Length: 77
Image 1 (cartoon, one colour):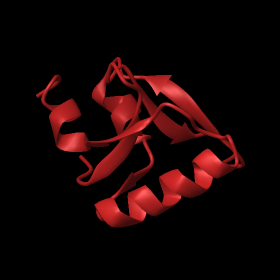
Image 2: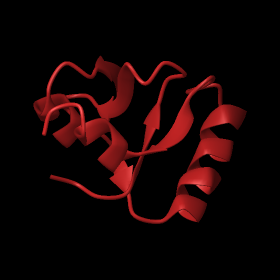
Image 3: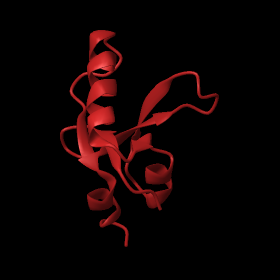
């Protein structure tokens, strides 16, 4: 179980994860804690904001928000 912050869509239904080869990112639906364990997670909110700004500038992510992963884990535990 991870702790920290993740990128999530507005409805908290999908999280941002690396693909299998870790060359790009994808949105995975939060159907189980297993998908949450795959999420890109950092403990520092300020660093997440810095990454979010860089990704927005390159149009990789748009409309994703920073959410505490603990609130998402509460659905399954």
